[in-house]
Image (cartoon, rainbow, N blue to C red):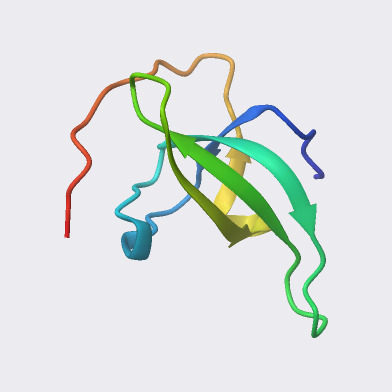
Length: 81
């Protein structure tokens, strides 16, 4: 299922390299084709609770899911490394 650009999505798995967890919310800002025929991906922008951009990253399509209509947003402290 291809998602629309500029919508909020939820991560479907933890991304420890970015200190992000399953269920964290990001904005889908572009889609990308894998250069060697692997799984295509999405470019995401992650914001903190104040609305400041804190990361732009590329993930495989399987790492995101459409925001469920019955989801409740929550706040958690971002771990620093």
